[in-house]
Length: 116
Image (tube, rainbow, N blue to C red; front, side, top):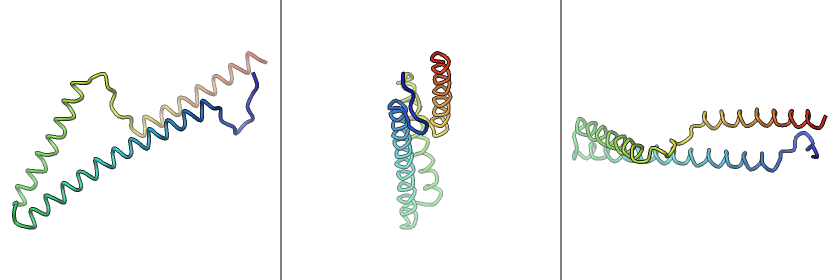
């Protein structure tokens, strides 16, 4: 087997890196969308308060109910589909990347031992 010059990534490593980066972007987009939806909901409730259509206490209660309902839906979905893993966090992705790097180093060491 031919060794690659240092600094050049293997095709498999490049694919893994692209997959990890794409996963990270998808996760961040999802988090951004959730945050944006919550901000819009808060703005809407605040607008109702400012118009006098909703009391401040009612607004806080409404927000609590909406967030509780969202949490309940998430728990139900998780219970219905327990085999589906939770979304990976940035820390999960970084930990997996570190493990992949470590495993790649071990593979290279074994290859050198085998050819050496």
